Image (cartoon, rainbow, N blue to C red):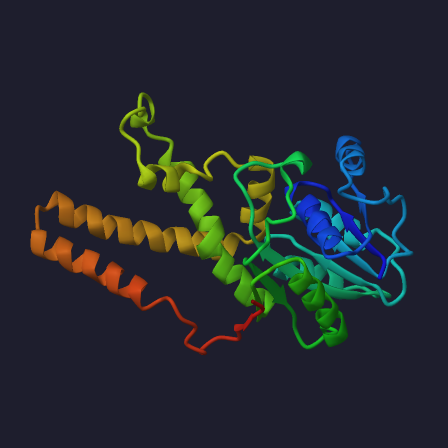
Length: 283
């Protein structure tokens, strides 16, 4: 199988390294000069790609806008599997499936990363034990999905989660994008100054992702605006409820509110089968 990864940031580079660890030859491409040179010099890729119609599988590991531009304006091999790892799925799926194509498209999203970026921070172990979300609908080619699932397992992922693109975007608005929004808002406080000596694990958890690339994340928020704004509104409502109880000095009401959150969290650690989500354990 001839494989290429287009986009050699930390995720794309890690895909290359994980696949090479599994025994595959992998070529790479990036619009910038440094990542392919670094990848080639450090044995992350075998060759630098300059065209894509000779590859059986192409992973597109680019930001949202660049992903759309690349997939819609690139010539691929007839019958190839083209899989993007963008953080929103429905807009990409709609765009790709709306035009005539000679390849099979599979949307996926590796639930892994670091608070740093760049090919120099890529590692073969980044995906070990992590979740890979694979999306699709009635037009999705199951043979292409099988190819992506096989490579997913060989990259070291621990679970494959399958769902629709709509479900992915709704869930990811809550589990990822809202968390990034909250972290960014959390650090915009005067008491961020002179915190040394006052921080522990909770502070680190809240601030770890505050410094992510605004170019990448602004595009993701806007592409998933309806879901993200809905989750922000829900959070604001919950915060206002807690604020009112604290300001009113009502210990009983405050405990009741906090208990609801605790019980909801305790009961959330399972899939109740009420959605289109299926989970397959790989290891």
